[in-house]
Length: 348
Image (cartoon, rainbow, N blue to C red):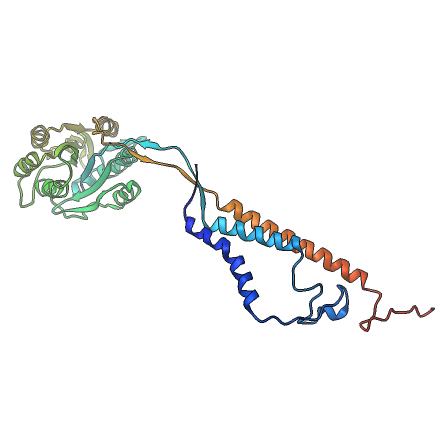
C-alpha cells in the first residue's frame, strides 16, 4: 500500500499557478524583441523571442516541480502487518565482583582464567539470546549498585558487563543487600515477570540486610531468584615446598544459595568449570517465557528518492538541451560581425 507521510505538502503543487497570477497583476513593461542569434539579444532586458518560455521547457519545469513536491511529501510503501512475539520477562543479572572472583580456577583451551572472565564470556552469549526481554545488570561486593537499569538495549548491557572489574564494589560480599536492591528495582513490574539471576563464589560477609530476610522480601514481592555458585572444587596449588591440592570454593555457602532459590520458586546451579557454567545459562535460557499480547508493526519503505532522482535527471536533460541549442546558435552566427555586417574574406 502506498502512503504519503506528509500529504499536506501537496498544496505546494499550486505554487506555480499563484506565481503566474501574481505576475499578471503586476504592471508589465514590454521589452524589445530581437531575432534569436542577434548580438543585441544577449543584452540584459532584451527578450529573444518574447516573454514566454518555449512550451517544452515550461512543461519540463512543471514536471520537475511536481516530482519535487511528491518527494517532499515522502511517499512510502507500507507492507502487511507483522506480529512480533514478546516474552515480557524482566531479568536482572546480579554478579559478584569481590576480590575472590579473581581466583583463576576456570580453564579454557588449556589455560586458566579467573572467575569473572569466565562469567563475562558465558553471560555475553546469554545476553545476546535475550531478544524480547528487558535486562538489567547489578554488580555487588561490599555495596551493590545498578550498573545498567532494565533496558531492551542489550548491547549496552554487554558493554557495561565487560567494563566491570574486580573490587570495584569493595572487598566483601553483600548478598543480602544485592537481593534487596534487585527486589526494589523489580517490584513495580508485573508479578510474573520478575526474575533475578544471582552469581557468587562466596558467602555473605557484609551488608545491612541478611540474605534470609532479603529472600523473604523477594518471596513476598513475587521475585524468583536463580542462584549460581561458581568455583572449582579442587585445584593444584604450587608453592616453595611443592604442590598441594586445595579447594578454592571452600567459602561458598551452597546451603544459603539453595535456600534462596527454593523459597522464591527459582533453582540453584553449581558451576565448577566453564562448560558447566555455559550449560547453566543454556538451562536458564529455556525458562518458560510469559507470552504477552503480540505487538504489530508494518514495514515501511521510503520511496521519495525515486521522484527526487527523476527531477534531477530532467534538470540535467534540460541543461544539456540548452547547451546544445546555445552551441548551435554560436556556430550559425560565427560569420557575422557585432554590427550585423558579414565579414569578407581578405581575398574577396
